[in-house]
Image 1 (cartoon, rainbow, N blue to C red):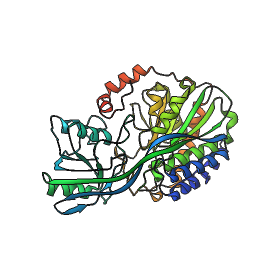
Image 2: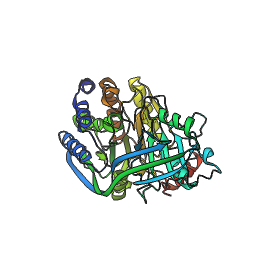
Image 3: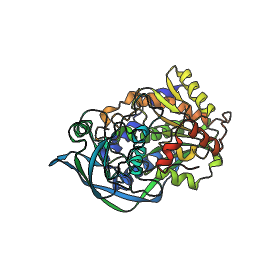
Image 4: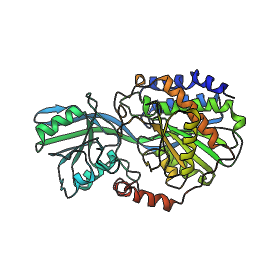
Length: 433
């Protein structure tokens, strides 16, 4: 039966939900907009799946105020990085280039303002996350942190700081555009710079959205995404498209429910952008022995080719390749670990998991985490093609003939060490082992 393919390729369900999400505006973790998006997603899932509901949890609230970067009587355009403390610091500007570990090695940044860019160059052995750059600056004694985009266009990047145990960062942090970063490095290296961040801190709540399909089995397949986005943009690619895809998959899988041998649970997490808080809450309250696998959608539809990071689980890699072969449609498979989205709170505990994004040919975020993450960057054709592929993948994973073994957490830890991820995770307070 292939009728479902035609219905999926002409479906407006997921794309219309994406439009609903981007039109809400601010979906920052803990905001009224995030809750509005969660409620809309619950209601959309309820049209196709059962037991749709919200599960609330507490988070550290953070609301952006005004920010300034002042040097030589000029006020350079900047934005606060979420969970920066509300604070001001003045120090000599030090340009640390890409902010790789080698760029910090042996550097005493006591009282300095550290400038790094968002690039991870081809010669780097691994991805160096923004938070690792921030905490290496903190460790070296910096008084403030300036994070410059490496994409042109006057787009200041955002992205949170803070750790799970200390959600507010230690030093003020701002993002600046590539152009401002280049100007700072060229004109003001060694000059006195003041970074001033105003932000409101309070107690807040976020929520996860739940729904389910298929038989009432103890074992379940989790299909997930995150509902929050940064307050400076529509959050279309990151991660409106992922939420919309969850809704579309609920529609497609409801039509094929008699083919599911395993319960499919949809979980749309809150507060991902401020430390994977929603998924951490869910993973801590779920019997993970009953989770067959996690399919986490974060960055789908940004480019036509899906990319599945499979975290060393060979059965997941094989399933993705089989779907690609069946449709003669490429899917990039990355067997390495990727610890920077909601799947990680399960994978670190040994649960098989995918991080499903798009192969853009670029290791950076592109429009993501900037004001340019808007709906016009995506197209419905790509979204619908990927919905067909991901429906097939979900049906495959939910089949009684599909098996994938959990890993020992010690083996995940060893893989982190082998892939040179452990040192950075220790710096950011994310080492769970």
